[in-house]
Image 1 (tube, one colour):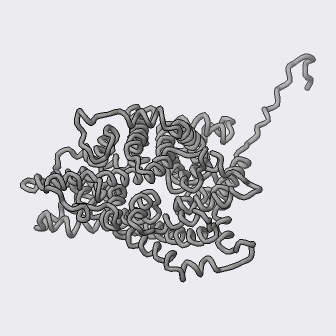
Image 2 (image 1 turned 30 degrees about the horizontal axis):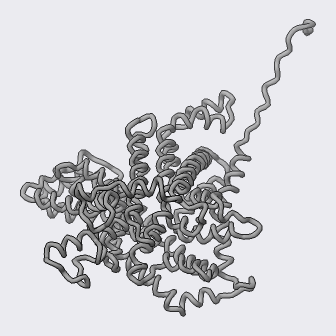
Image 3 (image 1 turned 90 degrees about the vertical axis):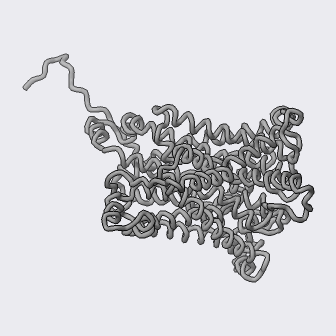
Length: 575
């Protein structure tokens, strides 16, 4: 067979280079650097002395030194108290919202979400404004009403262990509320109907059928509240230190004050890390029990209980909870921002914009802190969402043998408390051969690590909701895996991607636990400025900055939920 001269020869197929495996290896290395490297340096510093020789003296000091041992015991007691109080607040509130004819249930859910968005350290400052023994608004009003109550006998005092437990529980109870409310929404109504048919009253059905079914959710939510309280830095630093006692997070922070003791701080961080891992494992065990799987099967609409004569007490209970957790703290911040002194009432004569003018035009640190905060928030959200998207895609769609390792590395930071990660990152990147301390890069590394588990989990859930047939068709037509991700899968995940971006952005701008150890004069963020101003007692400026953070956070949430193409229900899942 001859070929005519000049006839066009068939073009060879284009060379297709699949970058999937190199990208997979690179992503594993990036996550290993983010997670493993700080923990490795943390372990190293805890086991060596100043000369680099092996020693167990740091761990011996944790056991023998009462000033180091007591903060652990105080923190554990405080965290258990927060867990119990959060459960006591959230469980009846969730039942009223999910299973009764309580008026305004959507509003209640929205206000509980506001507690989620509020940084706990800002809530602690709000309660400092309300319940400080001398200048607190509540105590000032009480003395005015009673004709001069002595200053040594205030009505309420937030600078106590009980006050700290209350202030933290105001912003941890939403974790219990969310789990219990979701559990109640999924309780099969057939079981409750069967209980009623067999003659049980409403109270008996609630006690013997509904309550046991949501008990795992209550326990899991309480463990999350305990974990949040145990690893929190901001609220204890604001309320416990003036009261004269430490918890473990504030003690670790104090070990970096002059003269610094990094080895002792590293040793104190490891037990906190171990406790965190155990609590997370306990939560997973509780939610993984077979008795909880019934919550996944929804049969019919939930039974709605008529409150009847109990409606006024129920409304009063909800009003008290929302007032203490959202309304009063927000009003306290607003009132303080509009007056010169915390104790003076807000009237037309005392109304002033002095604090706003001072913060935005006179206080030199504001502009740099705002620039650093929003630059890091934008960069962390963009890079973090991209890494989470790529990692979730590789784990859910890949058959590579190392895929589970990638998923583990992406979720492992959830077990690392912020203060512990801050210690590890500081020890890693303040080394002379890898000096990033004093730059925004060290903060970016810390924020990417902290926010990675939440971003990865959301993107992973989104991938499980998309059938891989479209991706398989793209591959059959010749597209590479990464091209398929960019052209097919990512557009389908637009809602979840934007929701994840918003969630990571909000988490970044409110972070304090790791940030407090990693900032310098040129890299301070708004959260650190608020903490510094609290030490100097400038509550008016703090209120202005706090309201600005809240306004930005709520604007992000509103825009993401207002426009379905940009967020929709995805951000609600993120919350």
